[in-house]
Length: 218
Ligand code: ADP
Ligand code: ADP
Ligand code: ZN
Image (tube, rainbow, N blue to C red; front, side):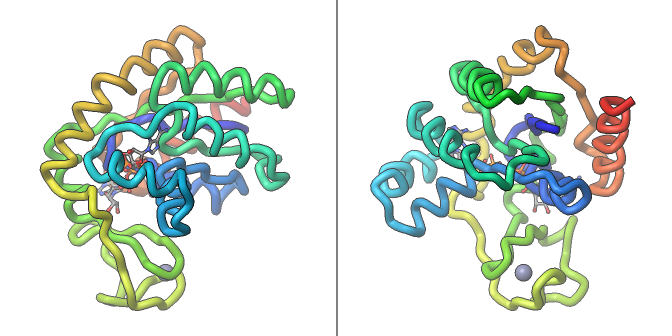
C-alpha cells in the first residue's frame, strides 16, 4: 500500500506516518528528514539545501526527485510507503506517478490533513524531537510521560529545528498554499483523494486514517 500524507507544515504528517509504519510495516519516506540527514552528513546536496530550508523555500525538484528515486530502490519499501512531505509540487507528483508505474506499483491513496493556520503555528513552535531516535514531541500536545526522557528510547537529549519559528512557519505556509495545495485537485482528479480533519487529537486522526485504509481494503 502506497500512501501520501498531504498537508501543511505541522499538520501531523510525521506523527501519523510513524504510527502507520509501526502498525502496518509501511516505510515512512520523509524528504524533509532525508534532506536534514544530508545536511548533517555535510554532503554537497545537503549543504546546498541548508539555506533554502532555513528560509522555508522548496529545494529544487531535481534534487528531491533524485533522493526519492534512490530511496525507492531499497528492498524495505516492498510492503508500501507512506510519503510524508513529498510530493510538494505538480512536477514531483507527476514524476512519482511515473516512478511507481515503472516499478509495477501504484499510488493507493492520498490523505489530505486539514488544520487551520493558527493551530499549525502553535504545533510548529512547540515541536521537538528526540536526538537519539527521532521520536516527535510537543511542549503542550504530546509530552513524554516523564519530562525530559524519551518514551521510546529513554534518551534525554532533544532538538528543535531552526526553521520551526513563527516567522519561517508563516513563510512555509505561503509556500504550501502556492506550490503544494494545487496537488489536492490533481489527486481529486485521479480519484485518490481522502480528506480528514487534522484538528482532532492524535488518536482520533489515526482512527480516521485507519478508516480510510479499511475502506481501501474492502
Ligand atoms: P508535520 O510532519 O506535518 O510537519 P508533525 O507530525 O511533526 O507535523 O506535528 C507537528 C507538531 O504537532 C509535533 O510537535 C506533534 O507532536 C504535534 N501534533 C501532531 N499531531 C497533532 C494533533 N493531532 N494534535 C495536536 N498536536 C499534534
Ligand atoms: P514540514 O513537514 O514541517 O513542512 P519537512 O521536514 O517536510 O517540514 O520539510 C522541511 C523543509 O525541507 C521544507 O521547508 C523544504 O525546504 C524542504 N523539503 C522537504 N521536502 C521537500 C520536497 N518534497 N520538495 C522540496 N523541498 C522539500
Ligand atoms: Zn528517543
